[in-house]
Image (tube, rainbow, N blue to C red; front, side, top):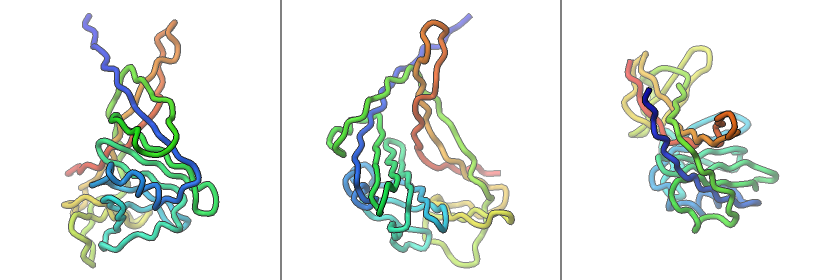
Length: 196
């Protein structure tokens, strides 16, 4: 019987309260020279490109963040989470395996993971060639039941072409007596094409 050696990893976390989404992005802008944002507003769930403090949509226009009540901004190394608490101000959390002591005010307990696992989630919709042109670096997914979703990844134009959201799970020991583990945290890491 062979055993696999677990690879312990540390996930660091920082937080701040009573901050607007735009200010949260500005405070961590060095982490996001190239990132994807997943934004929730009362009207829709949409994706945006994040470069520093600039958030743009599929037409290249700057995104108005005033109506957003929840956001997750991520790339391969960092994830920023923001949740509106009241009046456009909320709680922001930054996660990374890198040293992030210089960002945000409050240190959150780090997670010493006994192992990690890559995870994927399939986005709804298939490639669709839109009648209007999208900004370079964008594709459109569509399905008749749910409508369209513009995604900041290029080259998805035909049906059966899909996109998956990638993530990394961090496992911690739950009970040393029986060897049970839990997924203590999950960090979004990017988008990838699935060509059908």
